[in-house]
Length: 226
Image (cartoon, rainbow, N blue to C red; front, side):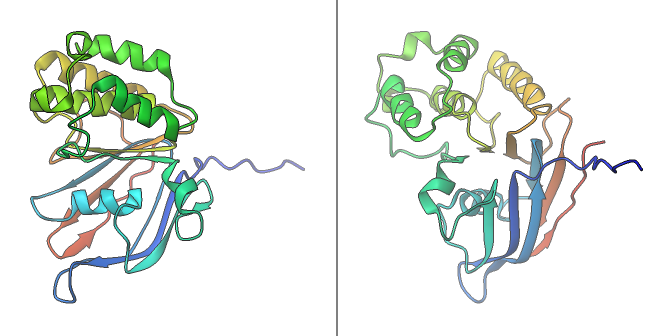
C-alpha cells in the first residue's frame, strides 16, 4: 500500500473571515479569506481599493473588525508580539524614523527579527548603492533612497511574511533591476512569503498567488504555483 504524498505547498499566512471598514458606510473587507504559501503574491487593484489597508491589517498595525490571522500557526489575536515578529512591514512613506541613520534603523529591525541576516544586508547596501548614505539621517535622503533603506531591511529581516508597498516607486533603474532580481529569488523560497502591493504585477516574477481588489467589492483570485 502506497502512502499518498500531498503536493500542496505549506501555508505561511492564513486569513479567515476578515472584516474591516473605516465606518459602517465604508466597508473595505467582509469575510475575506486567503491562505498564502511561500513565494511572491501580487496584491493588485486600482487607487483607493484598499491595498495598503490590507497590508496594515496583515501586519497587525490596524485592528480588524472581525476574523483571524495566523502566521505559521501563531495567532495575531492571542500572540500579538510573536505574530508581529513574524511579519515585516513598514510604510515606505513614514516619517517615524527620519531622525535615525540607516544603520540605527537597521539595528532596531535586527532586534525584532531573530533571523535577520547581516550578510544579506551587506549585499543589499551594495546593490542599492547605499554606502554613501550610511552616515546621514533618513530625513536627509531622497524619497527613493529612503525607500531602499526600508526595502533592504525587509529582505534582510528573515521574516516569515514580508509586506512590500509599491516597491518600485521612486527607484532608479539599477535599483528596479535589483528589486526584480530579489523578487525572482523570493519566488522560489521554500518557507518565506512576500506580498507585493502594486498596480501591476512585478515583471518576470513567478507568482505563488494573486489577489485583486476592486472598489467596495473584494475580488480574490488565488492562483497556486504550478
